[in-house]
Image 1 (tube, rainbow, N blue to C red):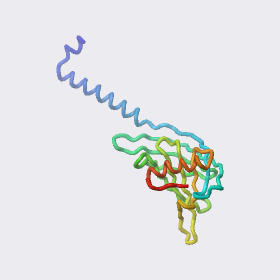
Image 2: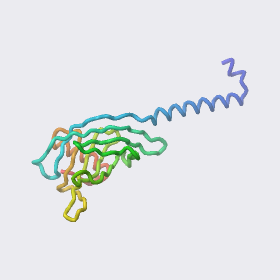
Image 3: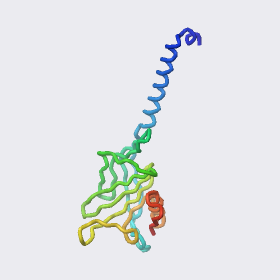
Image 4: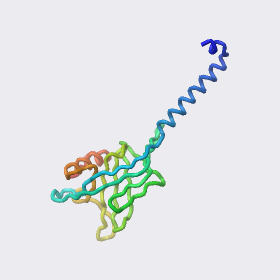
Length: 177
């Protein structure tokens, strides 16, 4: 206290600014620090409106989750592995959109399949719409009979619940059955 009384007003202001900058810098570095994700989820592959089909499938997510600050979106940089298919989102990182959802389109893979991945902000839930090539060579997906993969889930009912939870953040009125 004695030292602070002896300092001039200019020095007190300068010292206060330095302390505020230090605390602000530390907070920014702490909050924007990426964290590593290496998770395998058991999921279910199913066809919408086909209650008789379900197939167990694993989805592996490896990469970094980067938290955005000051209005910047959070980002994911890494790979998503679905069986033997690897989807690389390393460069550039994929930003999370409204409602903390990342819609990650993926192009032609091995046997002409493409689709969209919906993933939540904590990378805890994933739904993949699988768009298949039609007769004209265009990829298409329909919620009345399209194929989906959802994780984590052990049953078709859980997979449908995860799909609806994630997809309805983007399309409120849409219901997968």
